[in-house]
Image 1 (cartoon, helix red, strand yellow):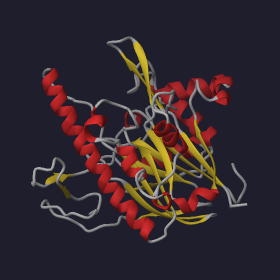
Image 2: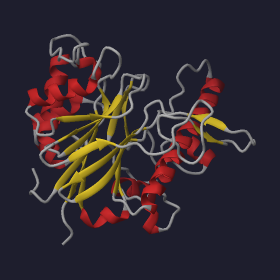
Image 3: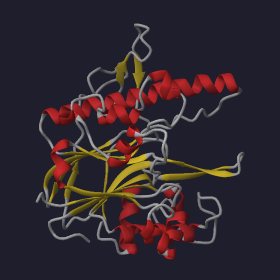
Image 4: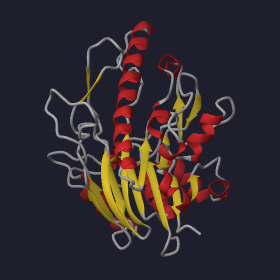
Length: 350
């Protein structure tokens, strides 16, 4: 743990975390296969516990957290998991649930952080609203300049939190923006059509998110935006069609410096698109029999928090020297998920 005055924030997308729990929120932890290929439920459970213990974070945004539905309580399941793993970040805070079995839940240390769900924006009906309505509502925006407004929803509404921390009051928005993969395509032309439609929706969600960020910046609030944006500079050819990535929209890369969010990994990728980029995820492409690495997970801070931000770290088993030199941690990172955690260490300004 950092000093009493410091703070460690993490985001971690844990692949098919929900599959490790039964309907009562108890861990299976047996020899049956987990949602991860070639990994048992017991192996993934142990790996996730090992990684979270090593992170030793004050707050962890769990992306793809266990399901919240009529018969499953993902927050209670996470608290039980944290207690069994001996994590000090053992209090779970949920926001709006969704229908994807992949929730956004914050685990935090209640001795160091007080947090509550605090959604902003107007409540909408099916007709929707412009100007950043509440994230469980409907956002109206003309996406293709056809003078007809589109109605956009989040499949996973962002988690909006108010935090009281050793470094003062902060706002936090946890995100898992919808993937652009063309699921259900019947042929190449259909795949292109679906990819463009999904990219358009993803950008609309990022515009919606950016409008909320602008409101917090206008209010002078300290803000952290973190999670899985399923996007990054130069990630696919459709970025050229729309001119910029969702990450650039969320960061406000075309805004004055005092209106931009900052993440060094995103900044590095934006500044040099032709060189090697940092990576937070590693996927196996069976058709090509090789792995694809991508930068998808971020912790962005508002300008007022920049002086407090000491270091960002991607806990990559191959790219981070400390992770590579520790076989137990390296193996746990590979068994736990196809994403790797990102942490931000903060401390009072000098």
